Image (cartoon, rainbow, N blue to C red; front, side):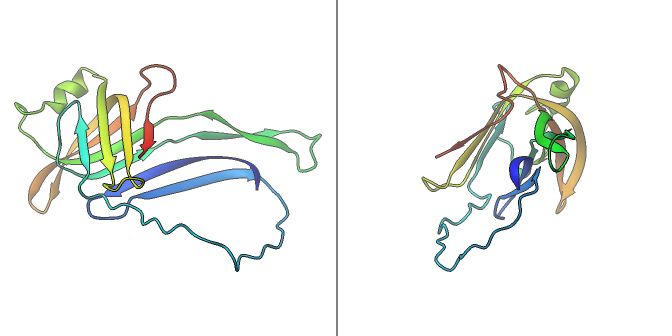
Length: 179
């Protein structure tokens, strides 16, 4: 494919490898033969979601799962003057969302319901990986809680919190820094 546009989501579950799921759309390009016998591949092992740091609104929550989705909207620009009837694919919108699965805290410790009711925009930070060169810091300056549900993890009360990532300035809904 050529002229690809896409979107992705990240799924991190405690003690599992962090996964990135990609979805791309592009224009058809005829395949060509390639000799991959001399290909070299990275020896970097993906980080597990262990030893991670996680905070939402400066509260260090005990998190079991963290999911984010960029949710780009991909639009096809049709054009009869092009050989395949499509000029290109473009990104017309995005809606960054996420979910966290955290242990429930006493309301006096952290009142997620007040954050939800007030539509408060809060900072979210997570660090995945511990080894230099294989570490990713995820930061979002203005996260809003869109839903809170109770859950159960092996008899421990949890909160499944749905998030909407909003920009603080420009297009900074979420930032990935690799270190």
